[in-house]
Length: 331
Image 1 (cartoon, rainbow, N blue to C red):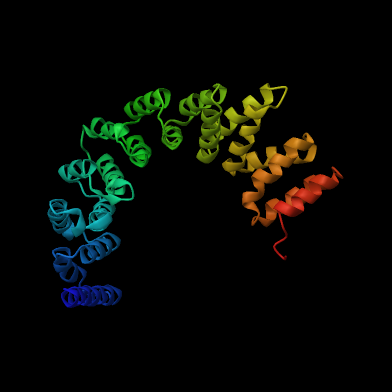
Image 2 (spheres, rainbow, N blue to C red):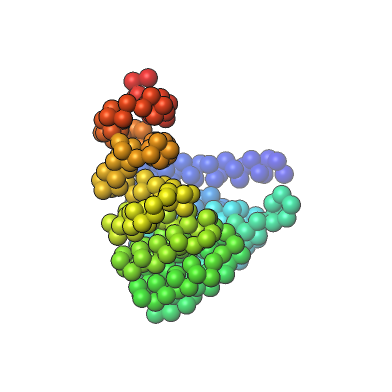
C-alpha cells in the first residue's frame, strides 16, 4: 500500500511540475489544463483551476463546471478542505461565469469533515465565493437566494455574503442589509460586515443609518459602527463621527470610540482633526490619538506632523509616549 501511495504521489508531483513549466513558458494553456481538470486527483484539479482563472481561459468554463460537479459527488477525502472545488469557484468568478445553476449549487454546498471534538464544514469559503459569483450574474432572483445565507450556521458565511448582497439592486439590497443590522446576530463580525456593506451602497442615507448605532446603549455595537464608518473612508461617515464628537461636552467611552473610527478613515480631513486633538486636546485624549495612529508609524509625513503638534504642548509624558509607540525608523 505504501508503495502504491508513493507512486500516486510521484505522479501528481510530476504532473504539477509539468503544469507549472508549461504555464510559465506561455504554452498552449487550454490543451494543457483541460486534461488536468479531468484528473481524479484534487491537487491537479485545483492547480489547473487556478491557472484557468489567472489566465482568463474562458473556453474552460464547461470543464471547470464538470470538474466541480464530479468532485461534489465524491466523499470529502477526495477533495479535503474543498481545495479543488474552492479553486474552481474562484476561477469561475474570475471568468465572469454566467452559469446561475452552478452558483446556486455552490451556495448550497456543505462538506463536513472530521475535526477535533466533532466535524467542521470546509465548504465555507466555497459558499462565499459562489455568493459573489451569483450576485454578478443577471439572475433576477439572486437576492432572495443570497438571503438564505444570512441564516447559514457558519458565521463566516453570514459575514461573507454581505458584500454579495451589496452587489444586487441597490434599494432592495439596502433593505435587506438594514433589516439584518437591526435584527442582529450572535456573532459581532457579522454585524460589522453588514454595516460595512451598507456603506458601500448609497453613501449619505447609509452613513446616517450606520451612525445611529453610535447612539445605542450596547458598547459593542457602538464600536462596530465606529469602525465601519472609519473603514468606509466616506466623507459622509467622517461627518457623522465628528457631529457626535462635537455634540458631547464630556468625552466618555462612547465618544472615545469615535477616535478609533477617525483613525481608520485615513483621510486628510480625519488626520487634520486628530492632529488638532494631539496639539490642543485633553491629555488623555491626546494619548489615545497617539496610540490609535500608531498603526501608521511607517508614515513619515504623519510622524513629522505629530512631532510638530507635540512641540507646542511641551508635555514630557506625551513626548515619552510618542517615542515609545512611534519609534524612529532609524532605530
